[in-house]
Image 1 (cartoon, rainbow, N blue to C red):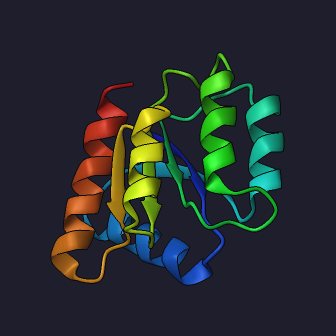
Image 2: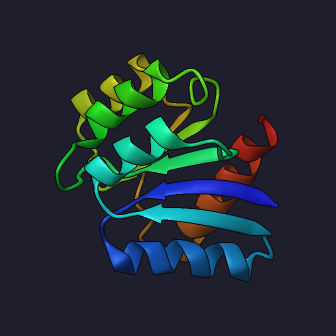
Length: 129
């Protein structure tokens, strides 16, 4: 069972990810947060940490860039694999993510093949934990 922290404000994207994991028979449990400030609170209070964090960049209240710094500054989250899953293909966002500790940066999928790649990456990263 993969424990995932998903920080995503778009409910359609949450549903897409949950459906993709189910369709590919991935056993998972997800804590889903819809804005950056809720994620900060979760990170600071978490006692049972996830196997993987999936983070959108464009979030209300606290931007994903700030959340990367929060995650990597928190001892219990520092080593947890971090997957950035966002619509931004901007080089500065990609560079920022990798320079600050992201394990993988993926642009949100637009095809079923990309969804499959996303699920494979989630399973691969969670296995590192």
